[in-house]
Length: 267
Ligand SMILES: Nc1ncnc2c1ncn2[C@@H]1O[C@H](COP(=O)(O)OP(=O)(O)OP(=O)(O)O)[C@@H](O)[C@H]1O
Ligand SMILES: [Mg+2]
Image 1 (cartoon, rainbow, N blue to C red):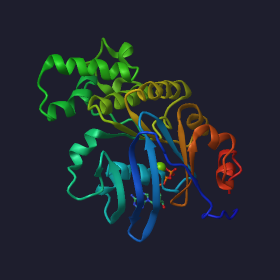
Image 2: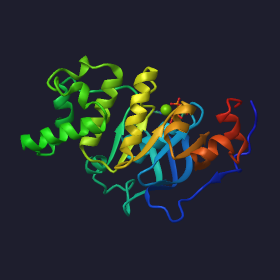
Image 3: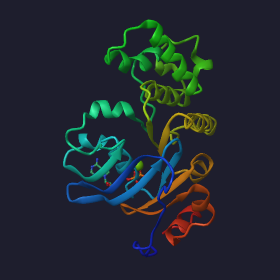
Image 4: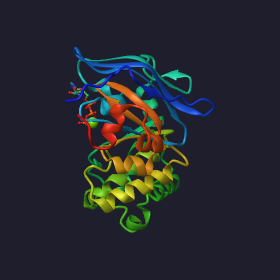
């Protein structure tokens, strides 16, 4: 195993760009294990940012912290700031439920509810008090269109979501997340359980979505990161070693560890 100098970093800042969310000195501990060791990252609005790095380096932990999904894990401690619209998401007085309407998440395995396609999308909206049938219909249609699924399911909206293919289920989960009109969509390896065709469709969907949403995606698939993301952050051992525009990370990274990782010569 090669030793890398972890003090050597290249982390860009957004200068004059509009930042949707940023973390300051973010640390995440599971008991005594410090999984994230002081990460400062800025995410540009309406862009796709990919988080890459070897297994166990903290990508999912970092992503989950952005909408406090780590809260539910016992013995977890998160310190530092997650700044979103002038509010520290990590402070105790934040209404986590409301915050997650603004910062939504899609998981690795498609996890639709055991309900119809229609109800998957309207469930949370109804819980938030939306009763207007016409409005719900409209949101179902626009969310499914944005998730590039409408044409395939418009005649079977009341069929079970479990009757869909894996790729369709994942796009339904994306539709369900965007029905809440979040600002930010967090996705943890959303295509890793899918075949190449479904993966391609999910990727197309994400590229279309960035007109309206800011997207942060964890991926192990280097081609995927290169294809769809504007920025890439390379995580290693709980730190971000390099953060730059995606084309630079993949063609001329400044840090050796990044170069070795993206070229498949790591470790
Ligand atoms: N729920 C948990 N409880 C305790 N430790 C955890 C938990 N989740 C992750 N960890 C630890 O935190 C560290 C980072 O894990 P994380 O899942 O964030 O890595 P990752 O980069 O997403 O890896 P992968 O690419 O394999 O998904 C690891 O040491 C892991 O063992
Ligand atoms: Mg992970």
